[in-house]
Image 1 (tube, rainbow, N blue to C red):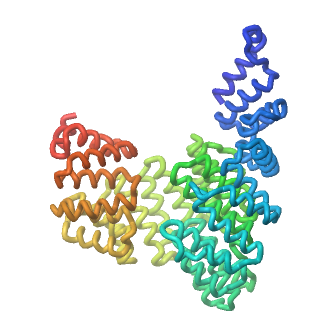
Image 2: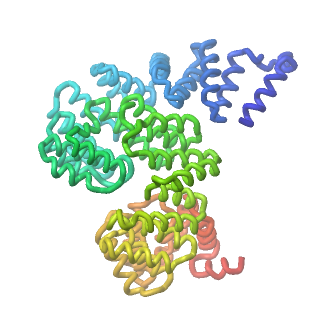
Amino acid sequence: MRILIALLAIAAAAPANAARGAPPSDSPLHAYVVGRYAAIDNEVALAARLLEEARAARPASISATRRAWDLAILTGDQPRAFQLARALAAAGEADPDIIVTQLVEAVIRKDWPQAARLRQKLGTQGWPMVAGPIIDAWLAAARGDSAAALLLLDPQRHQGFMRAYVAEQRAHLLASLQRWDEAAGAYREARSGGGVAGLFLRQGHADALAMAGRRDEALAVLYPGDRPTALMRETLQAGRRLGPVAADARQGLGWLSVRLAGDLARERAEPLALLFARLSTFLAPDLPISWMSAADALGRAGYTQPALAALDRVPGGLGLDEALRARRAEVLAAAGQDEAAGALLKAAAAAPGASAGDWQSLAAWHRRGDRFEQAAAAYGTAIDRFGAALGPAVWNLHYLRAMMRDRAGDWRGAEADLRTVLQLYPNEPGALNYLGYSLLDKGERLAEARALIEQAAALRPGDGGIIDSLGWMQLQAGEVDKAVITLERAVSLEPLDPTVISHLGDALWQQGRRIEARHRWRQALGLGGDDGLQRRLQARLDYGLDAAPAMLAQR
């Protein structure tokens, strides 16, 4: 808003400036400039109007048209986004972002030949390398060639993260083909992790089982006690169908867009994440996860009101109230309205019908504000009030409280919570690693620490954080050569984690590979991290590993 106020002041002085050649306030250039700054200032409605004025006055202006398209995507103006994408393509602006927007329009219109032509234009570099085979599969299914579609979505033909994308989409495709037993098996294989996406994959799994006549198995899938799953279970017990997660190409590609948006956001590719999040709402406005994805992307980009409006589009009656309230609070807090976020969550926790999830959301708000004691207390309230009803599932609340107690300086309380977790789930890798690494770091019960970390690594060998703990433990034990090998593996799993990379640097230094060690420290320093880590890394670069602690103590 400050930028806009300044621009409006400039606009008021326009008559005096006109003689010196400044654009008058009613000129297309003025509308374009102010519209650009309105977009920067997150005044998206004003920006869209002003940029449209500029584009209408100069329809041949590629830059104005491109900015207008950007804002149409941002505001969710589907007809405008499609129209401007066609105009840009006709003007030769055929980059992948414009092409995929046109492809989405073709899929919505079921213009499969046009969608296939646009798919070929996408190529195979960057994100099309991931999306391409999945788009090809759904287009083949739309043409009636289910065999080709399933061949393209064979997980055995793919590696790494791509395999997870394909496995999930194969489950959706099998369900759309009404091959229920196969779909149930595919969903079972595809389900991993939690969150809202995991919730809806559980729905797909249960729906496929029920449609295959395996109702008891479907009910077993819906056993966890969160509110959305409980409502799904009630629906099935009442003899009603849950419904598919992705019934056709439109919804399948909507799911793909949601997944791409989430992964791109984690890679800090915000503009592209926002594009795919919005495209998911174009493709699948009937899927709640599309609007939740859009809200996440908009909130991260600082577009508060559009983010809140997207959350308002999620229908009620799905048991998602707690998740939506938590997201609203995150959006408000990110916009600097932390008190409003806290008031929202405190009111929900204080309400007569408050749930464990409401107290978890309040605890998470305290955590984001570094109020770790209050966060631990909120988790404690959830444990005291709802632990008995949750049964063994209460382990997660103990785990979360352990982290907050640790951050608040209450290690003994944190240790007690971690040991409670391991009583409930002796093979929980995260708790094993957390307790083991903490004991190692504090120099306590080192034999137990080693056993805990080694058990965690055996249970989850693909977790870079756990493998880092294993390598760090080996280094502290003087097993330098073994530690270097283990920490190199950890870095391959977590290539952007400054702590993991710094540990490898320490191991390389102790192995005598000083130049490589400095390279790793410099790499870790460039990735950021907390102030303490940054200071330690800089001291290592300045003085070497051996002298760094003493020199830091003198500062």
